[in-house]
Length: 343
Figure 1 (cartoon, rainbow, N blue to C red):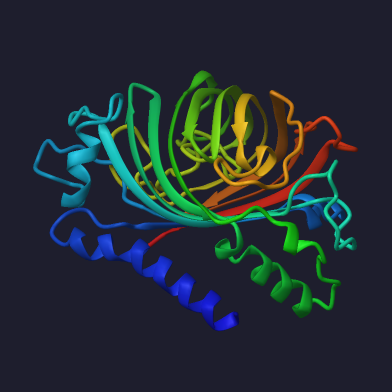
Figure 2: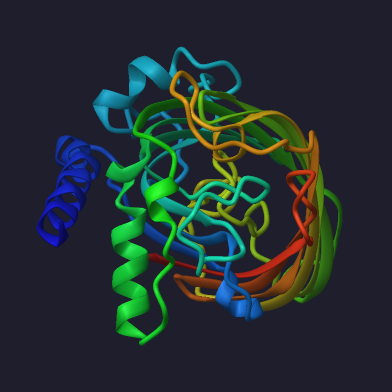
């Protein structure tokens, strides 16, 4: 099983990196961002227990002097609304990620009917982004797998064995294999800006939605930041598809390389979702599987600190998530780290 897991991850990495080889002659992917979310930061295991995502992104540039994006991206980015303006600053990202969900009681081997199903999701995605007049638009197209071939059980078991922690015992009850396809759109804009290179604050509202057999929801919210040398991006995001990619080396509306700079800030944000479908709670789309009675309104409250030095950005924060299904015992708190490096 470990060999299968390694082979599958190798295949996903190949799928992720293959398009990069076709980018020769245009602006290359220059920023790597790592996102890691885990409930262990809050000392509790269960519900949304781990999320990991790696993204590569190009800088934001225009096509005024010729094509600046990989050739394979133009048929889609020129077709998608809100990002198809060649006069705007545009960027592309490619990502690979995995999410893991378990019930709160991981010592039981039997099916816990009133608690969250065991579920794992592994996916690859391509994001299409633009910035113009203080606004950022993002589309992300994702394909993935839920079920045993997400290898969530294998990764969690390996991690727990490595730290000498008990394994979750109920993975035989996880959701069944199903192909996932999803499209996500989100827009963000900056308002109420104050300050420049020194002390300042800003507010960054957002709204969007996603549709597919993984999730169907509409969301909205805002982030507020306060600190020294605020970055010129659109805030700090958890692993929320369509939101998080922002090149660290070309972060200004002009599209020119960022100066060597140091910044530090605190931030807080809220995201509210109206949820119509969540496969990790509603169960498989066309197969018989465990499911629970989900709640249709879910909110995330987030607070943390961020820093920037030269071509490195980092943030550490906590997310407070309201209950997602009716029989859930408690709201959830989990921690997150994301680090970006532009090379």
